[in-house]
Image (cartoon, rainbow, N blue to C red):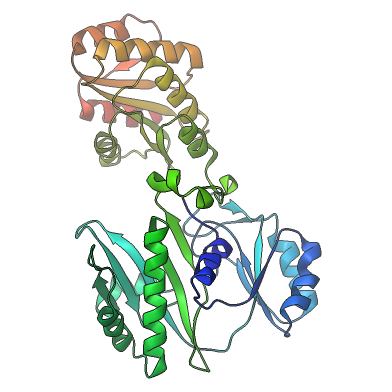
Length: 386
């Protein structure tokens, strides 16, 4: 679960980490009030959406008069902001963060994330922060500094100093960076986070470190014990199909293709999407219905897949281990009849009672196409949408 920038910055402030002063708006009538509250003669208007690349997409604007502030707020609120991370549909802007401007001397990238390979939390930093950090990581990885946190001792002072030296910080900035980095680590652990990204962490002309932006992601599996964070979820920023899948206890991620996928098992789902891509198709989603899929579960999955207007065919790839293939076939037949599926449905079954399951599908009269194996299923699905 992602937090909005203004929500993430509140966690930073609660930890004593400096951020710019700001005001959250949800209607244009609050713009003048924000200018009066913040003072000064220039402000930054930032669209609050769950996607990166806002600056390049026009979602972050510096304004230098109250009239320009009112105009920026009026045009951004209610608009659909499309960035490289949320294309092609974009996300609706329902809130804005208006902040004071700072005199910036330099920008730094700083994050804490989980490294799956080392199974550790890792502090990542670079002296080249800002909008081009992804390009820097790709073209000049030596500029990326890393410190692996011990699971018992956590992030240590010497590690923070190592990074501070590597970033070229000096004097009091080294101690300030150490306090800031360790504060972020405490936020990470206390709130069961999967990512804290400050991009950029700026050094002001006065030599102070300030978190100019912040992205925070919470581990969904820990939301049951992070109830104060769970209520901050903004469903308007999530795909409606993903929200419906979560309510149905299905693991679903929307993609931009036209072949719907229904699979039991995350690994099998990934393999299914790989085969579709290999044979020239584009998967419309990742959907894991789980090992104990029932007719009801399958029906819900069909409805969610078909709510995507781009879906022109559905590939069902089920391994009958926990559940027998004949039971799964019965569920597919029932679901197709109940939902009224109008697009080709290609089914590949494997496992216990697979012959009986295939026979039931062939005699069902619902027009389901039975595939011999996964490669055959992928080829048939791609041909169906060609």
